[in-house]
Length: 222
Image (cartoon, rainbow, N blue to C red; front, top):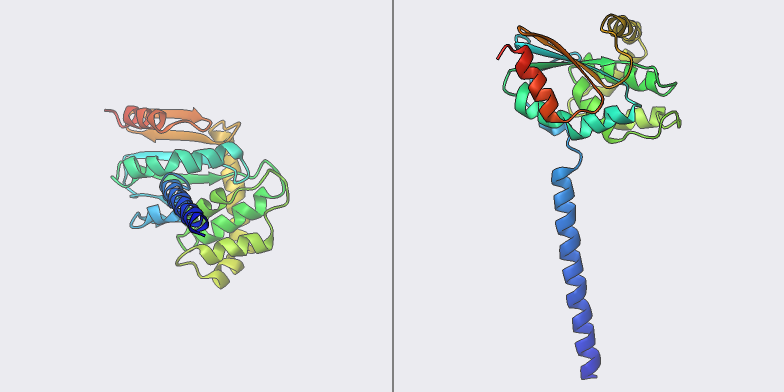
């Protein structure tokens, strides 16, 4: 009987160790994963698809498609640090230029984000789209999916959002973005067009934060 009790105690102790280890891993993942959390945007000025101070010396136009895997990678891995290092400090304002070239799912996703932008919640909603990104043209962008993200977007009036995404303003904005993309010679996403007093730089792909920072400093004229 004593041997059985000792065996049970060892089993319990082992399970406690495993539980503690799992909890530690979950905490670590919560710290390093999902870097595009909308919580990181608190206190930063927003105006439609623009994030940051309106008189910031440098502007980054970010051409992206919500279905684009590289855009998702950039949004999750690089963008949060760009926001932390450059947008919060007032050096940079970000403007999302939402394209819909990948396929059918791109359009309702873009319209949903733009509709959120009419309440200055574009970046929170876009962050959730990238955090929950599915496979390209898999049909994952359903009404249920979009409404679920709307419910998770703090401060969003969902009824007003629903009306806006079905209106004409979002469609007009998508056409305007396409025209700007042609002008900026955008051929793939993500593409960053970074401009300031010192000129203009274009970066393509899910570039790391140090490349973005280098381009920012060059166009600032520093």
